[in-house]
Image 1: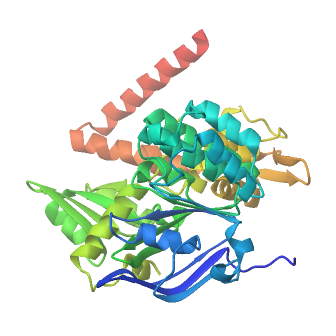
Image 2 (image 1 turned 135 degrees about the vertical axis):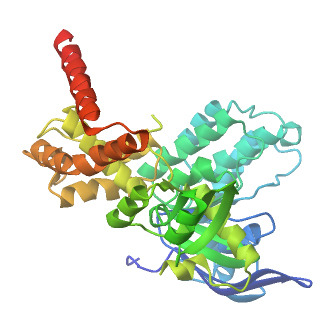
Image 3 (image 1 turned 180 degrees about the horizontal axis):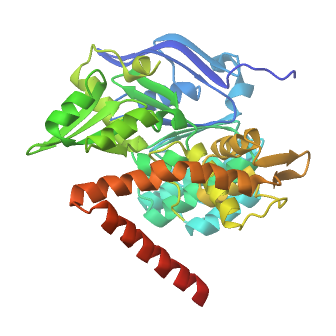
Length: 307
Length: 129
């Protein structure tokens, strides 16, 4: 097959309606090949609905889905190249992890048994116990192992970490980077633990109330906002004209997060009048953006303002 | 090892980390630097981001590519970086120092003698090593 520049996954104007609720409301996205995407948003924002459609496992009410340029619902071959691990992935009740891995090995053409075994050891997973008897964390480990060892061209993890302790989550992130470095693929990761995964992401998509709030390169986002702290009058005059994402105050002290890329002159000016400038971590940026969008539902989005 | 912080573009941080290693001499001129995948795994960052940081240094002539082998530190890279850091020294260190001194009411003469003392202590420590 000729190499194609078509995105790995493209959706156009997706809508999904459950009874009278809009889970997705006009979502358009293009996910490029061999990148790691973070899909972030509050509970009920539409993440899981979007992920299942991206993985070709859910039908939209309206709009178009193309996976490798093709309609996934008419192509079995397309679906075998996608691995979707749900937050509460179901397995047949009397299956053991061992049997689940064997079934996955048959389904996924790129399955790597060696990687699976290494992860089983890393997570200390009892592979002969019935899945019904596993703890929440062990169940999550089964999903993580299948998702990674499948080496599917498109791999979608919906909050894969539930019940995993801090050590197990670190193992997951470490192995993911190692394996992705050697075997690049398109990975979509949804998580509420933004701090933990931020450095792994190349691109960030933030969804809120079924709409895309942000769709941006992670490193472009970093440094796109700054917190200005100091005397409230000086802060007020300094931030004049910038879009405000968040305000805090303590007596006459104010700390205001603005959307701005400040140059050396502006930084020097801030220092001159005694204002402190501090960078805003990605997690804060996502939280502030979501909150400010909710406060002004019809206002322009951060995304548009970035341009 | 949490040298990477999440509030500044990571590719810039990777470039700065490599620059610091070159300035400190731990990465010698004409020595091979780790691959972008090695950087990614070590710092637990996205490999594409690591590559972007390395490419920044290739563009500025600090690193160069040997096809099929990897990345190497260019001859003269250390001098180039020292020059860059010296010209940034005033803005980065002296100006904040002067500002803080003024805020605390430390006059120029006192500040200068404090700097001299600190320099003397520094060089005494250096000669013990």
